[in-house]
Amino acid sequence: MEINFRNVSFSYQLNTPFSTAALKDVSFDIPDGSFTSIVGHTGSGKSTVLQLIDGLLIPEKGHIQAGSFQMNSGSNAKHLKKFRKNVGFIFQFSENQLFEETVEKDLIFGPKNFGVEEKIAKEKARKVLKIVNLPESFLQKSPLDLSGGQRRRVAIASILISDPQLLLLDEPVIGLDPGSKDEIMNLFSRLNQQGKTIVMVSHEMDDVADYSDQIIVLNAGRISKVGSPEEIFSDESYLRKEKLRLPSAIDFAKQLKKVGFPINVSIKNKRELLREIKKQFEIKKDKK
Ligand code: ADP
Ligand code: MG
Image 1 (cartoon, rainbow, N blue to C red):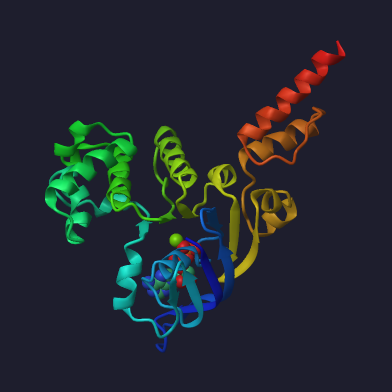
Image 2: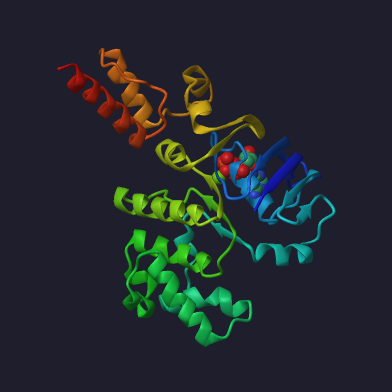
């Protein structure tokens, strides 16, 4: 699903003494099928962007096009309900939203709400549990008896069960152990390869570098830069200015170069780092 923001501004508690301008004149495009990451300081407006895309918030100025839906200051909530069926929003600490006695009941809650027959919803629950790599026996377990990483995967499954075309992820792996993090990020990558558009807010620069094809940098409610990982991460003084960390693979490549190892530092992730190191070994072998 393609998304376009045109001169979008948004303030919380508009027309009150507490009014906060969260986004100011923001324009960008998210291509259909892309994996776009939104990065920036706490308070820069990242979660606000996701909520605007989902129609949970309405622009104060400007307009948003998401698929065939237009949203502007005049949009009403009813019109947006239909749109939201195609969007899966995975909130920060999404496992906190599990509330049923069993995993199965949590999974079928959404589909049943949209009028899907119970038997079909249960079949979907069985299938979606497999997609997030949990055993079928978990269907009858209480979410409370699962580990943090497993609960997060159930919460993600409860969104994927509706097969949304667009996934909005707000810090999807925050607070998880490294194993669960990798597994969940690989899942999103697979879903993206299958054609789903993904918009992810994250502070994990390694994930951002590994998976995104576009990065949007926000600073105090304004667009700072939009570009590919290569474009964003190649400019170290810019990253310092924005207080963004260098992905560890790029950082390591630069340190290797500093100690005299001949390496191309225009890489974006671990895969490319390994490829570059291997290349150097092969050059050495050929010279022998
Ligand atoms: P981020 O996700 O980048 O941390 P947010 O989009 O949550 O940033 O917030 C952007 C700005 O809007 C911040 O100044 C924040 O304090 C303010 N803000 C966010 N949510 C609310 C809210 N519900 N009420 C009032 N102000 C808010
Ligand atoms: Mg946020």
